Image 1 (cartoon, rainbow, N blue to C red):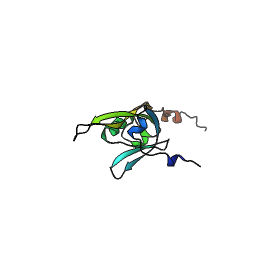
Image 2 (image 1 turned 135 degrees about the vertical axis):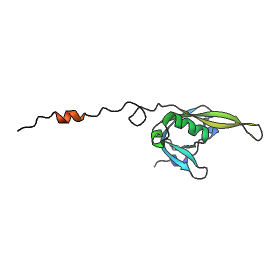
Image 3 (image 1 turned 45 degrees about the vertical axis):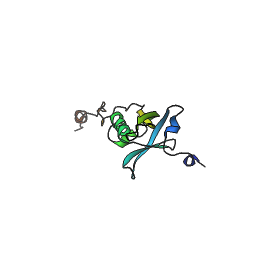
Length: 126
């Protein structure tokens, strides 16, 4: 029996306090409560993408969430000042690791298509 679902959940600062970890994106959904994209990793863990991290994914892999699938990201510990108290708080920072491979639909090299002229050069028996 696969027991991953009993030990996984959202990635939190305590999960990366001992060092960064790399995860492969298995699925993307939208969190209804916060209206933000959520990455679901092969490990079973998940990570909500608020503005800064969503921007990093868009820049690295484009605006189509299907292009985010199978990409590897690094999650590490970060800090930010709380705007109300000024107190420094911990957060998780996402860094894209894998490189989006060129394809016909993302500006990369297009696949060579057979020429229509080649079809017209067939010998026609009379």
